[in-house]
Length: 159
Image (cartoon, rainbow, N blue to C red; front, side, top):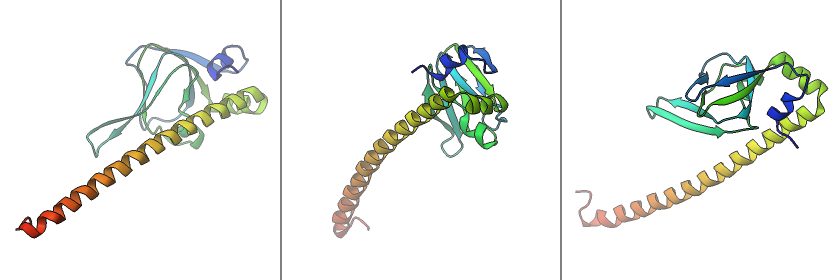
């Protein structure tokens, strides 16, 4: 099965083919979500600014046949993160009207979109499993430190 960007090339779906140079901002957090994007070539980084840590969190690095911008696009809210071209990129942008038309009239488009969302959920599930394992390890280390602290307390450690 082909990916969505490849599919868009050969269809009569009104999507715009866009090019971005490496380092270009595709959209910024809080921008209005006028479209969603399908990657034909290149890599895109999705990142969130975090005032709590005074930095940025890399949410995803996406490549050919991936898509992004669907959460804000489908909910009608502003963008939740920045999208930056890591390399020179060719993207397809599709607006809401064209998206609805494609979903209504192109069964293959809908199936490709669902398959992409399933892959994204599988990846998130794997990451959650990894985070759970790290949290379990961290909790064990905190318990070890607590035990050590309590064993030192009778010796005047709380002084």
